[in-house]
Length: 257
Image 1 (cartoon, rainbow, N blue to C red):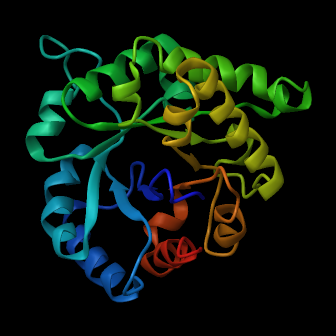
Image 2: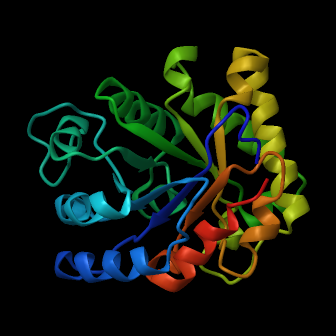
């Protein structure tokens, strides 16, 4: 982490878990566990139906609310979709785009991820843009080529001012929900590479201001080591974000000089 130039973000992704009725008691327990001082922004990205409850409950605990997906369309006959305007209207501050599960199960490609990120930026919502390689790509030594392409595609048409609103999350697909985690050195190498790609696109100053998160099974045990890396500015947390004690421990692990 390098707080001189960029903020640290610990973002939970609840995926399709929890209920709106469970948000308030969860936040109450989380608040009791969180360190009195924290050096990061705490976000919980929930199913859209829970965002109003998260905003209400999270206000006192200083937990920001985020969505997990957004439509590239502003409005229209798109049954089941949620627009950036609708997310902004209910108070979402962040929204995940391009998560590996969206790419895998819903066929989302890089151009769609870019369209979604731009839709969010247009409405003042900060996109958490996910990129990452499969096990086959890593074993074929194609990690940085593939991730670099994803980053370039996701940021197409986004200017330097908008870039400051973007968060990049590196999530090695082979380490999501598998119990496997990239070593801190592996995670740092790719996050450093992502920053190098951004530097080539925008220059040194914008690149050093972008927060890059690690999203491959970060948990209470490995968070401190991962967050000690110079180019890892936080985490996109899956399973551990459903457990107040574990999630609070990850937040506490970000209190590093």
